[in-house]
Image: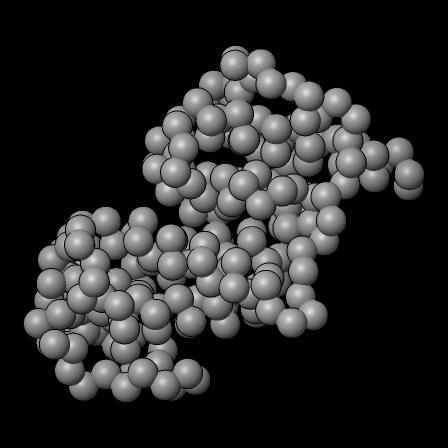
Length: 215
């Protein structure tokens, strides 16, 4: 049972993120989950510190607002703490956390008065259904490197891509997952994840090119 942790929005992060001095930062996620369930002080705090940067970057990709992303980070960790006993595979804590974050993003965009920006139409983009449409993983990373310095990139991802494409890019380049790990989280094959990545990068490049022609 989790002990000595107050789950209260606004106070949660201060209370749960201070691991004790004897905690070993090299302990595996699964061991930390089991320690947290056993009431060991600081165990969940180490999980928080370990996964915060990746989770925040993933959420920035999904909502294009760093402050909102941090609010959602807090929501995700609160939900993770409350549901920790339901985690069947403690060693997959990181993937489980991202799945909670994905659901929280969906809840956010379904709220009153909130909606994602509409997709920008790009001629021919959705007609490319070749089975080999996705480049190799290294090529996708190279294309991303060319794009990632664009100042409005996270806003373009949130506003110009469909949900699956945005999710794939957020997992791949926000959370830093491999194509195989991304495929597992979106419930598809590695080939499908590669194709979604290809089409998403193609769309972003076309949007940026179009914006450049208008300026």
